[in-house]
Image (tube, rainbow, N blue to C red; front, side):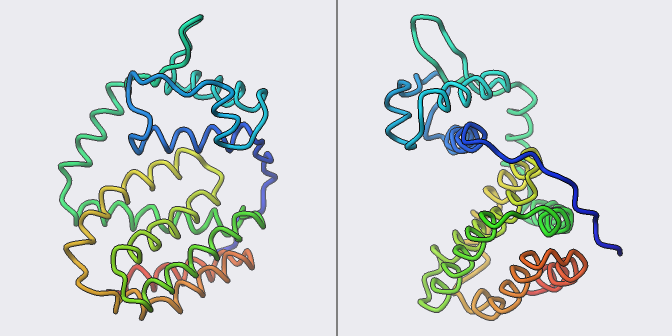
Length: 223
């Protein structure tokens, strides 16, 4: 397979980044449906950004249906769309084997695009999470190891700079994480696969699409 041509990417603004962080908090239930969002000043302090960045991020999320801006009352978390709720319910009911199959289908597409599109900032996060994964595996801390493993792969998904692909992957693995707690009894498998994960990070850093695809295929075959 030939490497994908590197297409120019729109540099994500601070507002883009803030919108993604707020969206993840909403998805994680930290901001609940119907709850009033913190004020602009509070959000500025929480995330260390300016007022214009907060306003633009809120506008983005309002356009996407995540927030409702009520004049004079504040900004509130919107109820998820009916179609989103149905997908969420279906994922909750899914067999772990189905979820794992979906994850594996997504992995190749994600790795291919991440290797072509990653930024230096993406690589800093990927490598940091890789180190956390290795430290947790070495320490035998299974819960932390599972969390770091999923965060590592989610960071690769974010390096695609495709928000829909990234969110789909994060949602799928969020449900899969519960199953991992029943599958793994210790961190032995994570420790054994750490070198392969390190190779994947190098492939992505080198923008070597074909090698990244070969490495993720090995990872997906590992126990």
